[in-house]
Image (tube, rainbow, N blue to C red; front, side):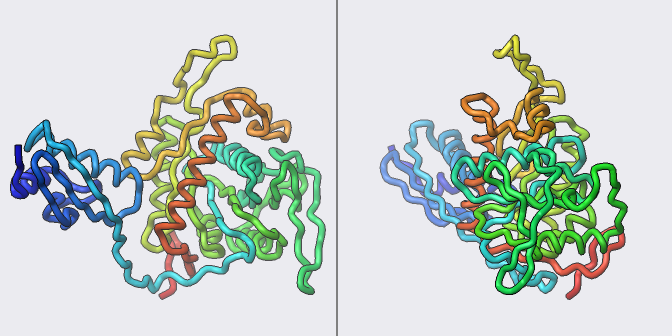
Length: 379
């Protein structure tokens, strides 16, 4: 049994690369087709390094050939990634990296109440348990909660002299370095600041601190898409962003906006993926049962829809809340399902960070001059 190149190309014209309008042949993704007896070798070149796009393209090619040519064909798909050279964006400038910090990961959510800070704290602890040097910057100026979750709410950062300059020394607990505006306010004191003052306070926490050597600095952003987010991305070259959502439609609608913010032309921060928090509830007395209180696999489906990685799910468990309130993140527990859940999500974050650093150039910080409903960017 032999197949012709023309037959194979005709079959490949019935499919397209995810996110592209043209068929696989017309778009130029198919670089070469070789047939020999019942064997077919297809060489593809894709413009995206995303693993799920590559996997889907390989599956689509196999299915198209087996369906339209022969179900007995032996198909081999070779995929090469050649990301197109993006023109220099005049709206972007080189960021101001913090010496000694390898990766800066922003943890965001479209709306409040989805457990973003809880996820941040447990990601940090899990990274530390894996042997990474980790810091957390609590950028939620108006509702800082990281000090409580790390049991350091009553601590005050000390001053240290570094290279002749006075710097703040982050508070450390559970192997994680922490800085938060919460260290400089009273527990019952509301922070009532306009954007410029909040941005100035953040810059002090970022650049007037002695973070030392870190593999990861996690930035716990406030909910939504606003001034603080723009200030952070103006100040720092963010390696990538993680978006946290619950499975319910109300949260997913805002999570979609959060992803869109990072992907805007004037921002261009790679989205490492989505984490689904409060994915399901399992009663202690019925450990085999799962109750999908907020909906099932909503964040997973959103990740598929937006063609970004799904980083995993965290169950709705009372002990996670209790651990956060007690200042001892649940990921510190050993040999428990919760430890495994946070460890799996953390591994995915690390994998996506490594892949992002291998496939994409360093992120640049944005230069924002004004904001009135949307950002205006200096040319």
